[in-house]
Image 1 (cartoon, rainbow, N blue to C red):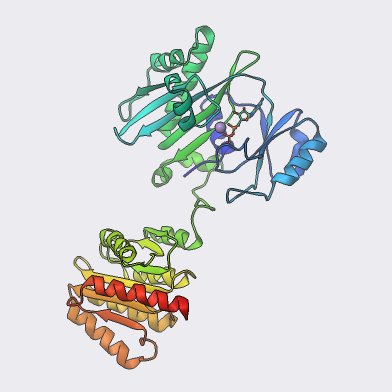
Image 2 (image 1 turned 180 degrees about the vertical axis):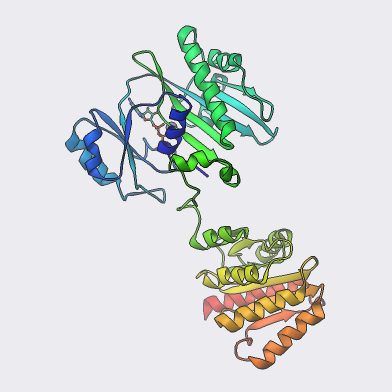
Length: 394
Ligand code: GDP
Ligand code: MN
């Protein structure tokens, strides 16, 4: 879970990482606490805010008011600005970069530092590759004092600044460890004209699954949340229910057995000229409730024209699957056609459930086809692709 800059800075404060004086503004009256000049920073999860026009300097309250009025409610790359951080303006001598992160290839945590900061790390590594240094740590290891200092030395610092930077770097790393972070980044770490170091920006990414271990976050007002602007409403619903579900830009809803087949069926759909509307995984033996929710996600997605489903009963049972589908259809009377195949564990029982439903509710099940194992899955997918095209043209 990404944190807003101001939330990250609350944690910085706790870890004695120097930050500028600031006030969080979601209402103009809060400007009473501010002195000028002030830097006004929109709180949104994007980098490069300066370039996108949502970091501005105000020299008077009047200027600040007009900038903030303009920022609040504005959408930047899909994110709505709800809060603005008003920060004491710092006079910058030099911008450095430092972070604690996880090397996903080596499966090892590390400290990254660069002599040149203020631009994104990817850009630093393109423009100034030799300015970057890395220090790897063992999982769970605390950095000794010399580690921070040695990193600070690689940033070209000496004397008192080296000691200051060394402790900032170690504090960043301790924060990273203590709060199960995936990333703690200061970019830029600024050397001011008066000769001290200040974290001008914060970027933190927490492991959502570990948040329960950190009641201190709640005390700081940092609550687990979904990243609005990233997930669709249906993706959020799925997430709450623990169903892996990602929307794509096609029109064939995929209601697969498991993740592997889900991916393979997306490939097959595209191979036969269609476009999948989603990835989804029911995982293991899904409950009836989750199966119905999964169908609901596809039915509610306005882009979905037809549903392709496949159940290979292994751990899960075809009759459970059939029951869930039938009950969903009876309760919700969906209009979208469903082209599916069911095979494997308890197939006969499952088939009886569909046969009965067909007999009892012929109108409801008229557009629902459930093929047997003797129809190759390619044929089922081709029919789904054809059906989606028909729905488009009709
Ligand atoms: P980001 O662009 O979203 O990463 O936002 P940052 O907080 O990193 O700010 C971007 C840039 O704005 C910094 O690299 C600085 O050059 C500039 N900036 C931010 N705060 C201040 C400040 O207090 N004083 C000055 N002079 N520049 C600032
Ligand atoms: Mn930044």
